[in-house]
Image 1 (cartoon, chains in turn cyan, brown):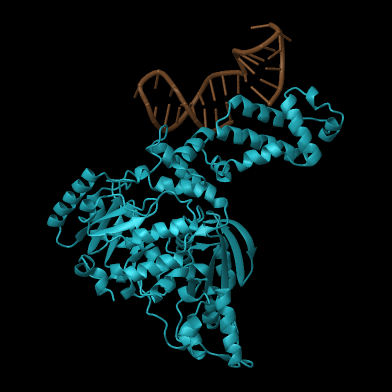
Image 2: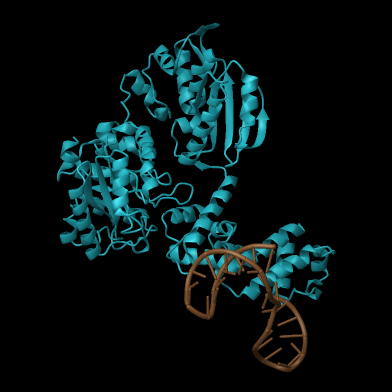
Amino acid sequence: MDKKLIVDILNEIGLLLELKGESPFKSRAYYNAAKTIETLDQDIETLVKQDKLKEIKGIGDALNKKLTELVTTGKLDYYEKLKASIPTGLIDMLKIPGLGPKKVRALYEKLNIKSIRELEYACMENRLVELQGFGEKTQRKIYDGIQFIKQHTGQYLYAEAFNEAVRLKKFLESTGLVQRCDIAGSLRRRKEVVKDVDMLASSHYPGELMDAFVSYEDVREIIAKGDTKSSVILNSGINTDLRVVKDEEYPYALHHFTGSKEHNTAMRHRAKKMGIKMNEYGLFHGEDLIICRDEEDIFNRLNLSYIPPELRENMGEIEAAERGEIPSLIQDDDIKGIFHVHTTYSDGSNSLYDMVQAARASGYKYIGISDHSKSAFYAGGLKEETVLRQLDEIEELNRSFSDIVILKGIESDILPDGSLDYDEDILEKFDFVIVSVHSHFKMSREEMTERLIKAIKNKYTKILGHCSGRLLLAREGYDFDVYKVIDTAAEYGKIIEINANPYRLDLDWRYVKYAKDRGVKFAINPDAHNIGGLNDIKYGVGIARKGWLEARDVLNTYDVDIVGSEKYFVYLD
DNA sequence: GCCGTTTTCGGCCCGACTGTTTTCAGTCG
């Protein structure tokens, strides 16, 4: 058995014991043994055979037994059990500078944080500062450390990759070497998680353009470089490809490199039936190129109306385009106001006044404040008297602004039994109630479905918040029957949130069209915990588009006299 | 978990530094 593997296992046991809060001397014994074996000049298997391990200083009865088991069987039961008792994410968290076993353990025990992504999210929600032994600077340091770590993983949130891609596109355009340039691939389709950035450009000077690309200041490593395709890794760790084509090939290439693969396959199949060959260089009748100036021409040539990139997943878009039934998708500037905004009353980091001012500055006509309800203990949920105080402040602010309406709301926890946590005399004071699950994720599928359905049916419920509870790349959502939940929302005329936070993007777009087809209406909610969070709304719009939604399907494209009225969902029909 | 021996359990490396906390705990090397 490889000595290095044995050393690694001993060191990991030491680490796991520290995380468990065992005696520091016990874990040190394992570290010491690891070091001893590492520097041992005898063969460990021979020592085991001759039963001479115990003669080595630092290896006593217990370690002798364990090492013998490990060397002879290749496995160690004690290690396997230890590993299984601790979430693997905790070990990853130790890689963050400034985080040791004690703090990781505190984060796990007090905040139930089990992975780096969950930790990052908790930092952004400002949840670490309240913890004993932690503070503003520690939280900052941990957050910065996570940004560093993230450079080494393989998947990225849409928002992260998109911002990288936009910067790169600006750079490429600034070289003066490109004719046309676009972000392609899954980013252009607005997938919630992407593996890489695909850029496409047309140019008279492909060689010079590639030279410029690989010398972009953000490039960390050049993987490949040619005249038509180059690959680099950016400082953020994201793999980035640039394809360069002739300008007359550009529309075909843009369609091809936007994908999805499934959409492209279906399109080629359709073309072939019409006697047309289709690839990234063109549409061909025999040897003759069919001239297309842009993507719209390509679709039209195949007797289809234009299909926006977000819909290109081979999920019915080609059939819809054939019938001329591609929806007119919602756009950023359709949004007139926002719901689901947190303030310093609960776990937000900007005041009610500041959030309202930021919404005004963004041109919104209304802002729906919804802090956490009293059961959200970890997030500083509002007790009844605090709710009343906030409602008073909102009324006061409403008197002082004529260009924005502040709506009174709450993000009420859905308790394990599906009930809400305020009495009716409080609930009836709100303009809107968002209901969300924030605890007890580990219920059975049936129980969780019932819990959600009961909350939807509650007469004070207006919006079902982040339906699945997932945190992208960090935490799976809880198990529930999404179709039953959507059907219930449809039946009771309740609105489903598209949470626009880049970590959530929940309801998943794959179910949005199902809900729309059943008449469900949506609210695109930033779930903002600070002023910057208000900008997340655009990611929600992206998901809404991916879910085939039009402006009329979305509550916050309506004027405040409609959304602010008691029976607004009636107007949405 | 190991060691040494006071043969049965107490001690096991520590100082600088940081960010908390208000006298100290945790991390790092």
